[in-house]
Image 1 (cartoon, rainbow, N blue to C red):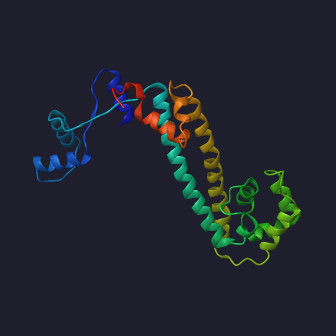
Image 2 (cartoon, rainbow, N blue to C red):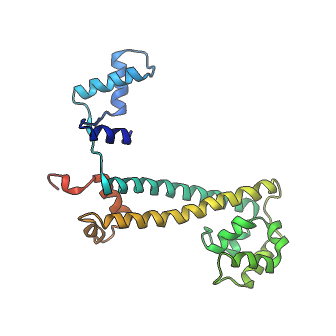
Image 3 (cartoon, rainbow, N blue to C red):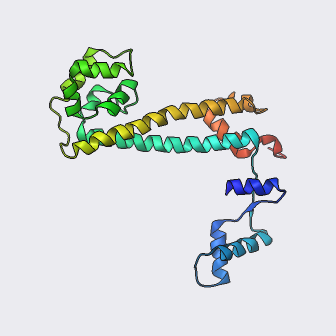
Length: 235
């Protein structure tokens, strides 16, 4: 819908929005059956627009369009991040709750994510042993992880209280969820960095970032949503 509005705007057409609730009510006045069809909806929207029952829209261009798109992408990433974090936590709580005695909650560190993606279940940890677990973890987190951490993980896996059922399925599901979480964790900062760079291209981007309490995400959302503050006639 947004792309269609931009294309129409570029051709010189005036683009407006009709409230979906108003459209539904207009169809009810036109005929009793509440069936949905393209021609009927289009006619109802056209009548609303003709009568002035619409909202004006603005199609952002250039840096403002990019900021709006990045803001939307960041919202999606944040939702995915929360969903995957909750899913991984629920799975580990069901199969290997002792994991959180060794690694903090929620699992975000490089060592913890490496364990989740390589050997998340107790029987997998036990099969590696302390030295084997340490060797794998060191590939992701070379600093701050010693044999004591790996030994603690193996000890926690010695007498697990989690479920023993569907272990083969969980051994595949947990690494997949953890991989998605790792990607989401990496994508968020990348999107913010790009938003910060785009704000630097805006005439007043530096001013907005100088406002106390207004970060890159909020400043980018305001700028992208407004489509350029100088286009407004008054505060």
